[in-house]
Image 1 (cartoon, rainbow, N blue to C red):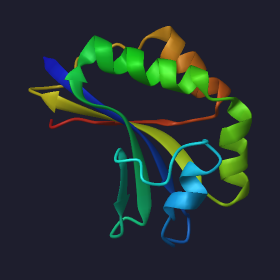
Image 2 (spheres, rainbow, N blue to C red):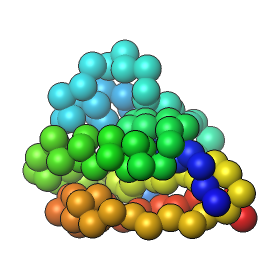
Image 3 (tube, one colour):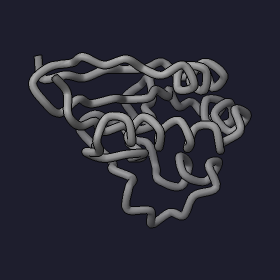
Image 4 (cartoon, rainbow, N blue to C red):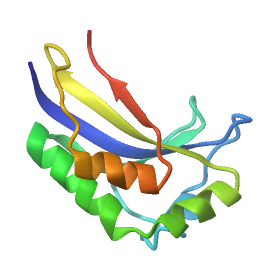
Length: 121
């Protein structure tokens, strides 16, 4: 059973061009030196950590709360500059036995965010 989750908002470009911090964080109203932002040059993506290695329920609550606090219009602005967004959920543990709460699914739906689940099995 999964014991911990890491959840991130991920931004990529379809053509494989790198995502700059300022263009990703600016519309979200976040500081450029935010330590939770990880740039992955190999994947040409950037990930904003919403919860990292937390117990499952707490990770899901934090991610849901963060999404609800950000207006869906902000996500539209990010898409207008050519970013593809998704919510990446990484399971740390023996396997994925996970029930995503309705508020998280609603928040993702309103922001048109696909959900990517990554599990060790």
